[in-house]
Length: 491
Image 1 (cartoon, rainbow, N blue to C red):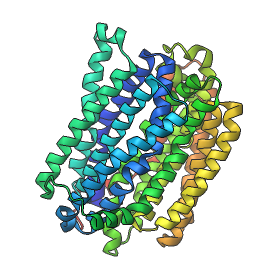
Image 2 (image 1 turned 90 degrees about the vertical axis):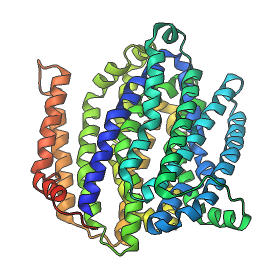
Image 3 (image 1 turned 60 degrees about the vertical axis):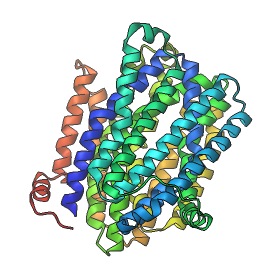
Image 4 (image 1 turned 135 degrees about the vertical axis):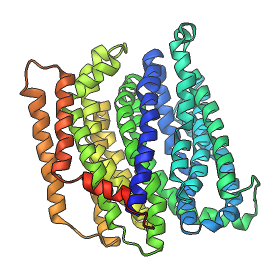
């Protein structure tokens, strides 16, 4: 099973690394640097508002579906029509609810038209996620990986042309960005259905049998509640910053610029979680020991995330300057860009831990526990945001995010250890803490004690030394990887 996991996760990472960084660093960033700062800040706030209400849109169907089909693959043709019907009905309901809240929050005119487009993007993305959850549940992880980048690949081609071709680049508007995403998500969802029809024997038909739909909604409700609570404590920051600050649109733009790189980094954890949910689901149903997979995931993600976070802490100003010095807002807000980015990136290790341990609890069916933890995270996040955003604006939101994610990561680990019976390996924990301390010292030394060397060179040397340390601490073992890849698949 470990060999199966390693081969598939490495393929997924490789595919995503070829496409998604280009989308984040060149297309999404290019759009922000091209359009007016205020219009992109509004887009980001509306995007976060749409994500908060994703609970209505998804209603936990993707997670519930992935867990159910992974344990009973033969039920896919039977469940697909009802699941698809519920999904389409929820898309309409979601757009009405989220649009109404946007109106109540004070958005008017072109902002509401922009909100409609964003809600349509979210709806099509959720439809694609539902289709992909079936593909992943069948353990077709490589196929799922290809589907996961189809939309971004199309957007890179279309938006890239619009941003590079001089006549369209000069006239580029945020509305074009939204329309492009709508078209690309629709094409990707259609392609996903064609693939699923071939491998899963599903048919495009609808089932509006009320008892059946009621059963789906009742079963998926705990997952829906969890998604809603997680969306609030993950995305409320941007909305509160944009609404509460006197210069809200500008501050939301700064937040978006910093959060973009955290969001790109979190693709790593999301790739693991997408694969781990059906994998843990099947392993737990077959009474297979999940501890080796948990340890493997932590050893692969946490050291890497620590290096990235500490690099952002000491080189945040250089990174922000490289990406946004052409943005008209950057000059007067350079220090704010650096502070928000560094603070947000420090939460990256916590995100990675949550992707492993919360996914394990989800696969175990511990939804009541997860929802209580998430509710605590929502209360803590909203209260702290209310206090800090008024005083420190976007930086206050970053502090709140770091505190929220760190607290939740620790809580998820504690409950996963208790509920799933994971052993507490003190030596393993101390190894990770020692690695963090050593990387912190190296980061400080490279940033402030080495003179006469450019920042890119210092950062490169720092990263190379940290990679070597991962092998020294045996988080990554060449011998073990070779054994996992070469020996026969164990399932």
